[in-house]
Structures are given as structure tokens and as C-alpha cells.
Image 1 (cartoon, one colour):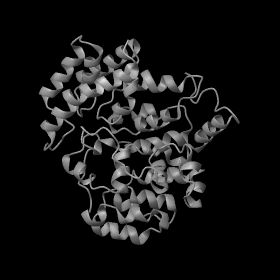
Image 2 (image 1 turned 90 degrees about the horizontal axis):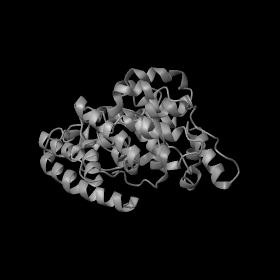
Image 3 (image 1 turned 135 degrees about the horizontal axis):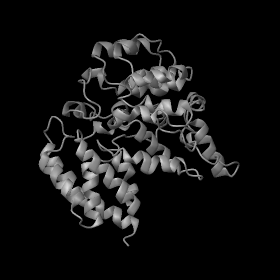
Length: 360
């Protein structure tokens, strides 16, 4: 049997030649680049159902799972293929990170991967929690967010992730009672309209930072934001590099299928644009599969990532040279208790517990 690393490399090579390169040629000037044309989709569906070798089938699946606005039959094909193939080989779970940068990762990932890992006796690898965060805030799951809101993890942790989902809508009201936590209050800022944000008291550092992590301000509104906020000097580059400073507001877009202008707007570089592409990877072109976020090792960027749902693992190490403000606030992060359990596990002081989700 092909070893995992060889399989992964061969599938990635096939993806480039059969999906990403022709997609870039077809959609480079398209208004909705995440909507692949019917010819490409037919090619990828044929790869899935062809009965050819595992490499071809897996590459077709991964290509189709990147496409926005799939029909019910196409969505069903993805979920059925994932369930059958995952049980058969398990190889598709090598591509969880890749699937979560696409427009239509199958809902079957919930039962077939995330729920299974959460219910194991042994604690998952720390990177699993970053995958779980990306899954919970993925805009493609807007129709089933109610289902995710019932995850039996601490309400603060679930709320922190779902409030970072751009399609959270009225479900956000479920977490109003948790807004006494400063991180939850800051995450809630992303669900408000720009004028509502400007009406808040923005002196509190987390709320003020959250107010800067959006791109729907006019130039005039952005000037007002700067006057109303009182961010610590450690966050100065979030203001200096902010695209609204000169470009004004990004055009309104569907977070599950952004148009070309929104993608170009968020390709301007800098911390804010990079962070928003971390929160919603569909603000990249579909043929870009890696995070465009630069300076990920910088303390201010790491801190902002935690506001967008990154679990604060090893934050003492990553923010060692950061202002005390960062470490003090990170101790109150909804997922800090989880991070602390892993720190204790690594030092041998304690175990993180049997399971991190109740068994049904």
C-alpha cells in the first residue's frame, strides 16, 4: 500500500494539474471565481465516480469540494464519497486542512471526523483544535449552524467559534448571556453593523481591536473609529495597515461565495486583510490553498488570531516578549483552560481529562 506521505504528494500533484491550474485559467477574470464552470465540475465528478485508482477519485473529490453553490446532488455525492472512502482508507482525513480552505467541505466531516475525534478517550493533537475552529466558523455551513451550537463543549468556547462565523445571523443571540467574558463581547462586535460598532464604548482593548478587524467602514467612518478607540501602542499596525484607511469600505459580498472585488480588496496585504482571510479563507482565490497571513509569529498577530478563534496554545511562549496586556488577557480566553490542560500534559503535571465532549 502507498504510504501516507507519498499518497498525499501524488494527490496534490494531480490536484494542481486537473483542478487548480485549469480553474485559474477559467476563472481568473470571473466575477464569482469560486463557482467553477460546468465543464470543470463534470470533469471532477467523473474522476470521483470513475472507479479509477484512489488517487484520481480523491483528487476529484477534493476539487469538487472547493466549489461554491453546489447543487443538492453534488453535495450528496461529496458526503457519500467521503463517508465511504474514509471508512475504506482513512486517507481523506490527511486533507482536512485543505478541505477547510474550500467553499463546500462536506457536512459529513462533522460525524465522520470531528465528532469521532471529540469522543475519543485520548485527547486529540493540539492542531485538531485549530481545524475544529476553522470548521465551526466556515461560512459554507450556514444552514446547519444550529446543529453546531449544541456541541457539548463549554458554551464560551462554542460561542467564541460560532460568533466568528460570518453567517451566524440571529443565532448570535444565543450567546448574549456570555458577553460578560471580554473575548465573547469582542467576538460579538463582528456580528454588528459598522454604525452599531461606532456607537460602542471602544476604550476596552479587546472590543477596540475587534472593531478594527472588519473592512466595511467608509474613509469617514474609519477616521471616526480612530478617534473613538484607544488601542494600546502594541496594536498600532492594525490602524496603520488598515485598508479602509485609504480604500474605504469593501463592497458587500456573500461570505460563502465572495465576488472578485472582495477578493482583490483583501489581497491588499497587511495584518487586517490577512487576518480576515484567516477567518474566512474564501477571501482568497480558489487556487490558493495556503494562508495568506504574514507575520503569524508576531505577538500582535497571534493575539488577534485568538480573537478570531485560534486556540491559544503555548501563548506564554509565543507572547514571551509581548506586553503584559497580551498575556493577562489571553488567560481569560474561552479556550485558555483547554490550552492549559495541554501544557500540563506536556509537562507531565496532569492529564487533560478523559474526553472533551460528552458522549451521546
